[in-house]
Length: 234
Image: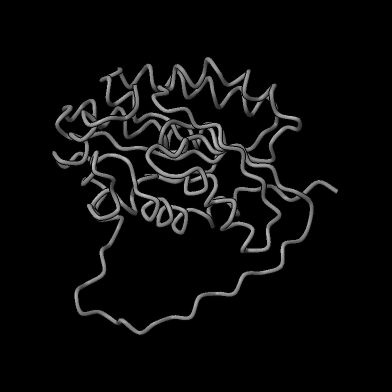
């Protein structure tokens, strides 16, 4: 099961709007002066291996492989001069429990340990109304596994809809900042913040970002990824 149309309630019922104040929308009639794009920098330095570990939002549901978040992220980092190689380990339908179950296999299948792991899971837990305590426990297991291997982590946060009840929403929303602090991981508070309230950036299923929507998310998070990368080992 992917994050399908039942997950629409998270958007259509205003579930993700709780963080709207963190994602300002440009005022109509604002400054429309064109800004020249920043020229790409020459790629240099050792290869930086990044593992993108998540669900359909990473797997590239409904878009071409080169339009997935990991593929566009790699291109954006390389445009910044970072010799990035991003491995797409997204699996549509993964809950946090499924992610925990397959993490060892994914890591053992890599020729080299990643320099950074980006973890994006939790949306399917919301879809299935899995108790936040279970989501927390599974994410703890994922973070413990990665950090025991000395792999730094960037955690992509999700937000619960208010229609699931105030206690559920509070318990779920606290998971990501709590675990980021507990495990010394970097955090993007809400992965979908750039697109959740932009219907033109969402596919017809009204859940998954379009290729342009994923591009917008990359624009918003590429600096977080670059900053989360540890200094290269000599």
